[in-house]
Length: 290
Image (cartoon, rainbow, N blue to C red; front, side):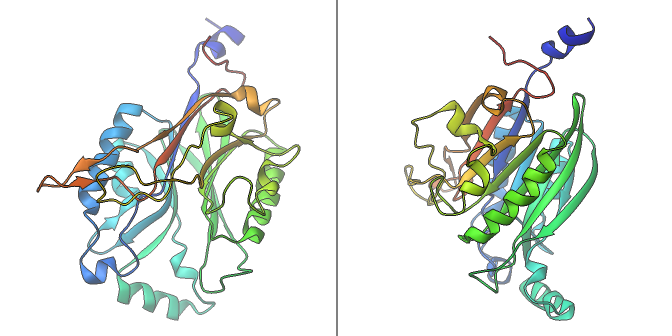
């Protein structure tokens, strides 16, 4: 089979975004990571069943005791990955930043995991208009999918509209040259100030909202020890851009990693304080299944 028929026979690209709760900046120092290992095991079990092509992480942590969470997940899945700590950018003084990270035995930032090769990556430092001591970055990974090159962006912003506006500038400029996916924990509701930089007229397409126009789609905040769901707001997103009709490119989207497991003593344990989001995207001329 050749040409358009071959392209049409390929499945949509499956993208997942997820913020894996690390237990807090002092968690390595206190030794209490809120059952991180058990929660990562739950995440891996679900990801293996979902078989995503790309997994974007926010607040992926690293430390001497816990290792590099992004690498642990990537190696377990057999994926390529790129990871960029944001914590190391607290101040302009590199020595001070390294000292803080060493003393806490903790850093965190965004990561992209990919079934396909990552050919290059770039990090963009985001402005701090409201919270001067909370460094945030936007990470881009260029993924060589069998369908064509895809720029995957991921970020974890504060509730600062100027960060969203800067992200909008960067991502829209890249979308002018080909397909992009933007994922992240944006700490903003879809109608909040600053979100118009992403989903305003002529902007990117919010995959979950395209698939579910009236659904709440809550992703935060889940108490990781609660007996039942506690999430009430949606702040975790997958956007698609750089395609002729972004709405038609969204085949499906849903909230994932939204069910508890159990600790060894039988108490409930949730994968994170965030749920994840999945989107199946038909780009590079691929069609959604009828």
